Image 1: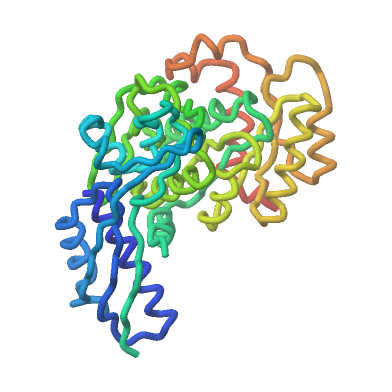
Image 2: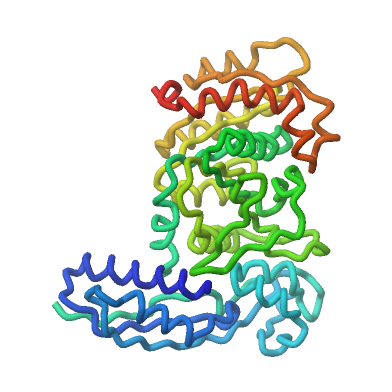
Length: 135
Length: 250
């Protein structure tokens, strides 16, 4: 379960932030998840709960928001969304993108000019958007 | 903030020694050296990992003749083990029929962070990292995200190649990354060029490997590869120094 590794990264980050801010407890965390990585939110949430057990993060409220993925061609400027071309990506390719989202450059091309040189504008990876602590 | 960066230390904490193999220019034998070092260490029963960070031209898989490898997903990614080496490469995430992966700066950084953050190496004696040539994103990111690694420099005896190695050494010294030494590869005439260069830059000259025409035929065939003059020389001059690294770290 790759979601476990990502949850570990979140927990480690929260522990570091909490230590830095001398927090007594972390009440809530906001996490944004990019659509491109297709993270299984249920598995990810279970992993977060498991990993927070026995730490001062136990019982933390987790608010997850998904961000839609979009791309912009660096050659012709065309912009498109993942949802527009989702069906064109095969299952094994989706799995590779799940692990290393940047390999999307090997599998996708600009729908207008055919270039692989495009920018992932939004919806890549995951990050902590806010954290609420108690001192 | 990007939480993945905080997972990198966690993934690397049970690795005793990380050695990045680098050069100023391409085509001097970094991947071959990385693969053969990993192979030699594995055959000496050390626990070894091989990480191919050359995203634009991964070739350790070609050198070791591994195809269709797949990783195990277990609380992250567990690298497949071949010939006693745990190996990880971006090539495992690209279909074989796709022949290129066009990545720019920020994509390289993201892919590198992701690989380091999700790969579960477990406990290793050595992690050999095959780097792309030069002082680009991968090296800057390795310096940024991996706190402790040593470097092994490889060059051919050409003024063109060593000019770029000089810049690489300056960057490594400024970044306070220990340099184990320099290896001269593909030597075909007697020359002190690299030896003198090492003296000038105050780094260890570890030895030379002759140009070995047998290597090309041995690529992809590990049993043949370990019998080449190249592999024998690597074992002789590198492994001896790596295993007793205190000797060359002073």
